[in-house]
Length: 512
Image 1 (cartoon, rainbow, N blue to C red):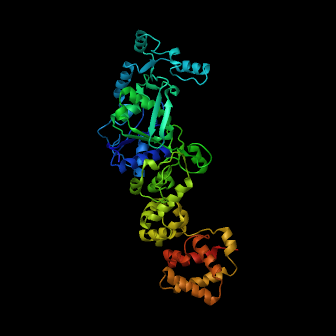
Image 2: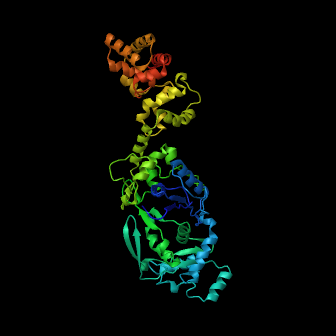
Image 3: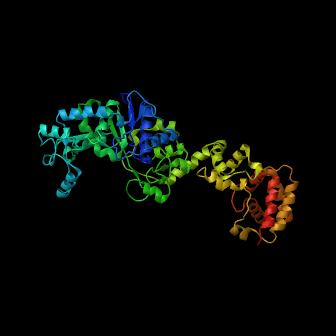
């Protein structure tokens, strides 16, 4: 049990839709905070004004609302450590930029993009660091008067951290253990830009983590290279005693081949990489989302939890509360996790089976109302029968949307019949046999499944008909093809009048 009151944060940038890898990072932060009675903070890192996308912040908040992952503090609900949008904290960051400049731990650079490109062309693998900075256009080689004059004249500049070479920086990662890096490989990262008076990620991240009293930074492996720089900043500010502990999660990898999971993988293989559907405000391009594809939020959470972590045994189905109880960073993997999207489909199937028929019927109802302007089979147009229909086919589906394909014949009588099934199942004597069957069905008083089945089977045996031939043709008449649950469960739902009506239509319409 950690000694300090746990405070963790998820800090996305509103530059587009939230990647499913980001969702997993937020989930792990939530599980860790909940396990130790801590707090989860949502912080919007919107300091990159060039890449800001309208609607992205609202998308992020709605995604977690749908997933059932709550935040204790954030821009949508406030808190004692706000504001929680970095663009609203400009004054705060400037104070800390000035501190670094006053201490000589950072410097002002006037290099234009063109000058930097020229230097990259001149020097292979150019890096703005201790070996090159004295050849550049910055306050380390300019007089204070010249620097002040340029700033006063409105010349654009950036503030860079001054990294001292040949120092060992040790990152004690809760997942990866001890990582030692030489400061000589670090460049003098930009911390602040005068053009928009905003800090870069590197400065804002550290200042906010400190001021918001973050105790643990749990983030993706891709941020591990920035950890030495961040530790250097904690040292420069004199905050080493309050520095959070780091834990860098394994990458989500492509389902096939090598490399990090991307949107292209989802487009190619037909699975979403975003929690919700996203429409690009510039291009209008629509990207699919787990919610709109029909995934249940609890299935997505369970699926993601096991990508890079396991409970230490073979269990797979776990509620959010169970995940909280079992979660620990020690059980997180160091190596990347293959994104097995087919396993995600399996989880969705399992969670559909766990839900009651009433719940699934409620989820199916909007789809049904969209498909039907009027219910063409009045017998099944009530809540009780809809629940019964769902119960008959629920085990056949992975997504609620698939219920329409599995059940449409209950609501809409067939007006055409599958050709292949007709050729295989409809024989010369079929019309006569089905006409006899209508008489048998007319005589059945209790039209529930078992009594109807008993009466029909008895008639087939008495007449010496082939059971399969009669039953397959019977199904074709009711459904229009060879699919559906037990035939006498279908007849019970449809009712005697509708069943006989469909048989008579098939006898009249099907020709061989």
